[in-house]
Image: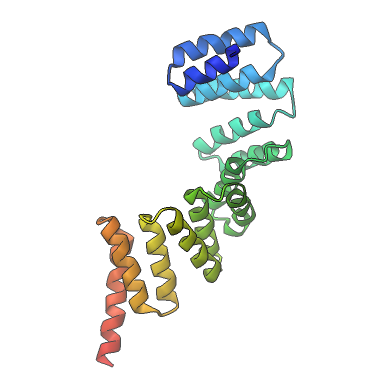
Length: 223
């Protein structure tokens, strides 16, 4: 195991000081290799030292303008700062440089979601689900974007897939309830809202959805 691998192992074990020393050794031994700077940047991100992390990622890009993981690191950094426009540019650059990973597409999609650009988020969130079909968070966010552009049938299928992966996903039940309510399937909506509340008793939105569903049912009974 070389020093980079040893340092990454220490980083995963949260032994930050030891990892930092090894990453520092790697940079001193190979000052023109961007990998050491990228790994040190990732370490600094975990320690919330974003300004220092930015310098390390930028140094990696100076050494290799095709260093995809350096752009990905910068994307995460700007995302944490809620600078979604800048973050999206970096994630896109990472993908352009060959980072064909679900996380990169997901984060790019989330940049657009956080800017309420639902349509723009769709292709990237879809690609994330294609690259990793077992991650319910990817599917769930994709489902939300589908719902927000009123592609409700596709959204419904996506939330159902989320429940196949995680049958205790209260937010998926809530969103299925909203879709059922929209289609005026009131009893079905009520069941979804009640299931969400069964799983998460303090689910405020589901409680409100249940209240609305019950009001609809009372209106129909009065008629």
